[in-house]
View (cartoon, rainbow, N blue to C red):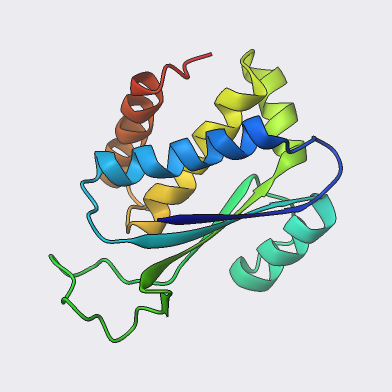
Length: 161
């Protein structure tokens, strides 16, 4: 498994400890969801302007958001075929997708909710990873399932504050 991290902002320092946390979160979500494939995930940390531009371009919403996910695999089928035609392989890893996170949102939401930057970053990463794995929150039942999974994963990682 590969986790590629691209820091394109200057608001929060992304050090080795934060990069290690990102990798741990990605690994935990994949383990929790019992994903046995060898995946590659790309994580980008961006500023407000870039996040607003991406949100407008891909969702038609001209404002900032905290996290965007860009899945490269369609998980709507019960099981993936062994050689999914749509999967892109990088050194025999399946490119699962990209997650883009607004680091300003990480800081502000951590302050708003009274918890650490690491906890907020992990929350957004778990949320983004679940989107890459085919979960959404388009209706009440789907939202409940997704949010319950998020909380379980964060609790298992001792990231409740």
